[in-house]
Length: 221
Image (cartoon, rainbow, N blue to C red):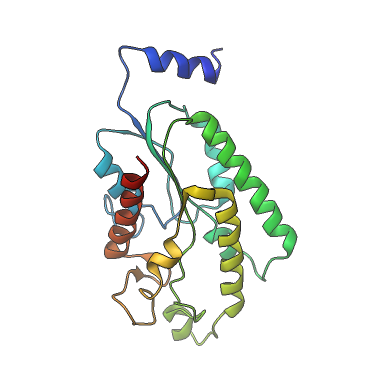
């Protein structure tokens, strides 16, 4: 069996090299699931990078374990134009109560290990690691919950802030601050709305986030 390092060495010197790669792993923040086919964040970034071969899967509901499960199937490449990661929101939303410190430590260790393995597979690329936006604009309330008579969830905002701290630690200089970029475009009505179905990006939101990611790529090339 050819090792990953040998495979990448042969790929680099092969005269029949295929298109560069675009790696995208993550949840509905970047998937097509709600903006529609071809209108999600990852799809819009990919379109601007074409021609590229797409590696990885993005899908609504994904948690960190779903990204970890993709590792064995990723081929890796020395010719990756960009690598996009978005995860953590569903891990937090799946909890019945605010997590304890150990949960954040575990998430940090696992996400860091995932990134290290991905960096080994894709050693020459520009990384874009997204943090989590806040569609409530700091209120902890969403229209769907409010219509059903449920109270706001301020504890969720604290959890979101802590997960974003973890993501920032894992990402380092590769962090893309979606939280700051999208703040005010949620359900407060202060700025044009970039969301639908409570927490999902609409087409305008996806376009705005994709533009931010592409601007980061231009700055870091």
